[in-house]
Length: 81
Image (cartoon, rainbow, N blue to C red; front, side, top):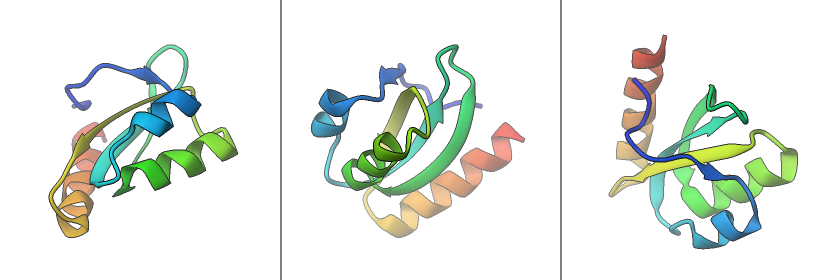
């Protein structure tokens, strides 16, 4: 089951607005197909994804800690499979 958030274009503006907090995120292609699910400090992770061209779109949800973000990402990946 995908994150219940709207897709955003993965661009500099989106990365600049991303929270500097832990979270889980999905990267998607132009048609909204999920390419990957990961976790970390959102702004840092999205900077890297943008630099490497890992996706065209992104959506995320925040978590209180990195450990909780890791747990959410694992649960989310399991649901997608």
